[in-house]
Image 1 (tube, helix red, strand yellow):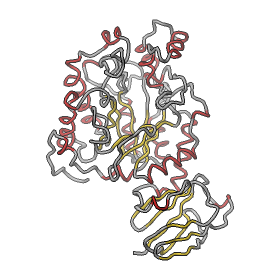
Image 2 (spheres, one colour):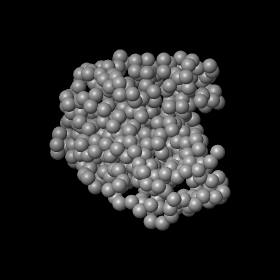
Image 3 (cartoon, one colour):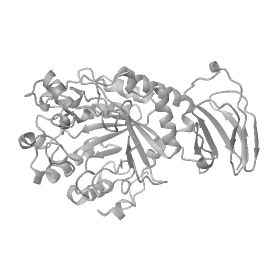
Image 4 (tube, helix red, strand yellow):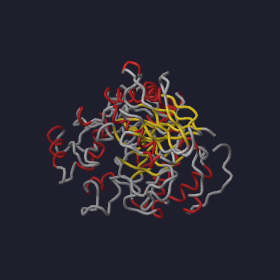
Length: 457
């Protein structure tokens, strides 16, 4: 989507939903998520096999949760009962944060965009916000004493990647919830001490900060979160903000947004729909979507996780293949430490993905699902399409020939990354690909293999 927007979008869903999504998002396929903040100091949550159960970024909300007594025990033992969560901010120093090194790692991973948590549910801001309610609760006033959003934004764009921002609509210190019997996320005394006056929150803080981020950093993507839990669009003024964003924002021709801004928005409105650890329901064919997950079971760095709690490079590459073959993007999260280091095991996973994409990226980037995928689907076989090319992506080396249903004949079949001749039998309605004899040393990567099928016009 280039040039000035020709449409004037009104603050009603029908109008907002009519906006074409900027083309870059559906072409990108792979992005990096970063959860980093005050929660990176305690960096702890008991490891759980349950979905969402290992989220270390929820430390603040779980400190007084009777359902997770391990958090209170851990906190009291290591920091003391009187140690408030806000006191962790002075230890969130980011003294080893090197934005250029981060950006170079993300480029080497093969990612096309990066999304940083500018503010999570704890309300701590990674930029020098001018909101009057965030004095001494932002990265310039306490902790790193620098603009983390600004520094990383510059570095990421310098490497040619798109830069996006995550922003939590609600804050635990201010908003009660209808989902729990207690009616709040944290202790009432902390809400009374630090909370923003509820009548001031939306107009005086939320909308102010969103426009501040847009005008100052011009993100290519805004990943909103938390707004969908308890309050509808009229409360958050979602439609009014999105109409402003699409009509008047300096990034209006590039920005994309997800579907977590308000209640009942999920899989109904938004440039793209969100899935988290494969929890999405209602995803629609031909509507852009994105799956996000961590390398392990947490988004924020969780010191309780060990090697067996992390996905292998092979598992992550296979998940990327599966998601892209179904029309989605993968937003893979890394959780840096409080001093600003991306754990080496996470770096290694990213480098492995990037090395695989260096060879096979043509089967991932700028592709879309093949309409005959369902008829040809096997446990180890996935498909993407680009123009007259069909890519058959094998997550293991096939033992026998691959027989595919095709409406047209193949003009040429090759093995991406190899000069081996591929024999095939092609006729209208069917293609048989003969699997060549190849020694492991002849293949540049063994995580997955790609056959490129060029169809006759």
